[in-house]
Length: 397
Ligand code: SF4
Image (cartoon, rainbow, N blue to C red; front, top):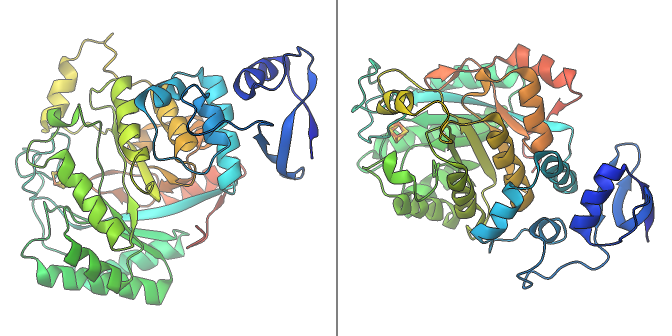
């Protein structure tokens, strides 16, 4: 069935270019089939009359993404074409993709607790918790289960449906009793609060992933941080491929993967494209994709390096690059939950709203974001209300 869609000439010209359906310049034209039309929500997907084939190397990549099941054979050229689409149009298409795969009015609220702070042996240049970075942060021991439960109950009472726990470790080698305690945290949160759980503990092997799976873990976070090319500028103690191996171990254990990165570490748009290339070519797209905006911390090497970059350099992150990264991620990884993570508190409320428009559908909320500030629950619930959004329920994906 075809529907007639009345659109502005601005949108029409873009849509015709993308959908390749008509050369008419009228503002009232049949663009193609519209499926799942729900006029009450204005929730529609435009399906091309003649969908492109995934094997057609000349196909418009946006049209390909909108008309296919999730693809994991993206090329950097295709991703670049999408990323370089004029922002106004890019956000329009990411909205179409978002509404096809998600309830557009829902945003997941997650709370992150640092269950073991500082003293990490890795040398991530941005991190206040690395023992190599003189930030003044003291190393702590792993929290007890009841200490964690107190925070989890508080998060649940405030509307968070995913509880994430981070420990500043390189890996879990020789940490059997700690892993057991973390397993207890996971199962107690599951049983008592019915929340989704996520942990980030550094590198894990297949056996450790299985222990976490058996405890009932929903997702494991292990960020790739940035592009493969830029990565050596940021971390020397852990290889990019070691990160991918941990992600593989997590997927093999049938745990959902949460992986993303940090924008604003002096990288360029080419790095954003390459970062998205790695994520979108994983055998299975990450269930959760956190986009962090660097919070530059005094005492970290990156803090000083960023001050040295000339003001007019393309290596300074612009807000439009954040949006382009989010919107491109939404288009090429349509089912992922895209999480606006650290650094959100530095954004104005309308900037966060545009991130939701571009395809974000999760935020971290609560008292702290590891060692940096976080927007609080009351403020966030009010923000969602302002924009007509509601919190997502647990396990709704
Ligand atoms: S592995 Fe994590 S905790 Fe350790 S230095 Fe890197 S970012 Fe910080």
